[in-house]
Length: 122
Image (cartoon, rainbow, N blue to C red):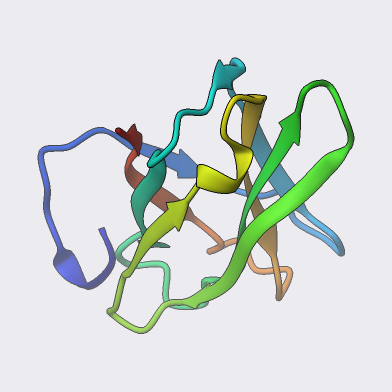
């Protein structure tokens, strides 16, 4: 991973399509949020992706409603990774479908990004 970082946890590698507004997303099955639930992950660009410049988005659909944004942040290939910890308690007792999104910001063929160990912690 970025900066030569290695880990034995599972990761989702996402490569958004080239061109303006290139993106990729993964939707997950709905689950009922409990008080104290947190979404955690480590994000960044893949190693040797020197021109990587992407926007990560953690979105959701609650109880079949419209897509809402929980958090978004930009990652560039700088050797650093970002630790994410999002409190989901405001969605308690709702059926929530999480959506992991990666948008390209620079039309590069090096926009290769990862979500390492994305989990819901209770």
